[in-house]
Image (tube, rainbow, N blue to C red; front, side):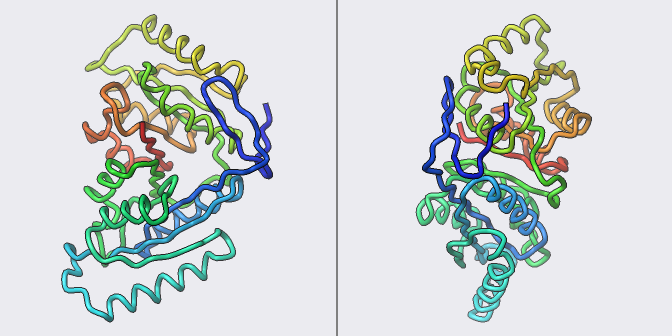
Length: 295
């Protein structure tokens, strides 16, 4: 199945998809710390924008609780100048609609800007900050944004490797709650004409038999009508490893996965990742971008 998305936006539900001539415009917020990592995120914004109409909003936060506790007027002026320079650098590559400088708690200001000022669909963010603000995108700030933002977050740690997203891995337990987030995975797959890898990680701590997993796979595939909607553009895999994070990373490496998708809320399977700090390990060690989806 070949999907063209240059002039149409794909609307998807669990039963069917249609191409609607009125393309949805995605609102994307990109947190900026002026390091290479935020530029890596912008590279993925550019890739996404080449497929779907997007409006991009940049935000830089001067952390009142961090290194720059005593923020001066000069600090604000320098940040404004850097943000203007960055916007000019990227204005012909992505559709930048607005930029903002905020003072306060990093994750709170980013979330408030994304939810209230922009009403963003998604945040694209680097996973590390600059030397000046080394905690901008690491540790608790990145985790808090993923946890508390009422939307999806794409976390990028490295430069864009491929000019497309050919393979997407969706890891989970494939119980009923997974159907709440899978349409988003499928939408990304349609946008990029990607192959979806349905991945179950079988670990000693949460071991299940092949028969049990296959039954759940088959039920999930039937409910989502994947044979009808995706044809041969999906596959299923059971991968055994010591832990969930090792399994996801090792499978993604072995199969040259371009994007790792996971849920951020729930009680089962991959959706408990942030509670167990598994997704933080994946973000820290994955060469590929990680898309966290809000249930």
